[in-house]
Image (cartoon, rainbow, N blue to C red; front, side, top):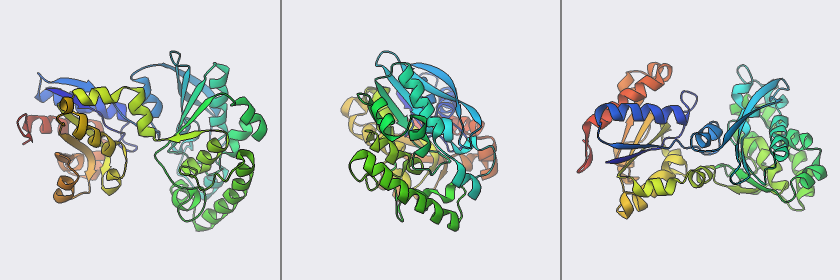
Length: 361
């Protein structure tokens, strides 16, 4: 049987690349004769570059400004064949670059200058298409740092003229309001209620600047609130928003892999109701059910850190089966601290019980 192994990242415990390799190791241990196709996935957040780099392109390590100004080494991908640069904003301004727990101070101080420096590096290498994956940022600066790094509003637009700028994000939040960048994502970045109000005020001022730059109101456009308003800045600079998961799918030729698969094994940190609303796992399952097994439809198996859906919800979603690392590990602590080995063990167990005729036993 042909098994497509295509997980997303498992939060902070495992990248998609590590998770895919772990599942493959476990599956192969139980079912030696299956043909395994390993294709880790991403929605544009942390791991975006690594996922794409596992399939094509040249990885370039670039010294840039981190979210708090200290230098960091950010990795980006150049595909010479298509003159396309793939940039992951978290490489330059991610939460993991803070060097500690996010606080109200870091929430207000973190900026996106390093992302702008990566864009400048891509332009210097002759990139004609620049795809920027948004997610996992520590910032809520409305892209001010990025625009400044590119020379300011008018200069930035001029430098990007003629470049196909793609904003890769599955976040649809607007810039402002109760569903906006500060209110929804600010607390995850260390902002207390007072700081959220401050960030909202700053973003409101930023919205006026960006709308004047774009010649239209970008604040309410889907994805404007992604990465602390970096989405709005990129839209104002001429960017077009697309699904991050779709970018990865198209760039890696995943549709053809899904069509040829007899079974699709995917996964993520937590399989819950949010998964069913357009995330990587849901998109992959939809494709598997329609074009998998050469058009006959392929069953989807989900391996996750935790499974928060009940059996009826899983069946209603059309997923063949879902399994949790925490169940085989015995505790959340073990599941997180020994995630890779536990995922190998889970994949071995699932593969051992798998029956080709009707899916998992």
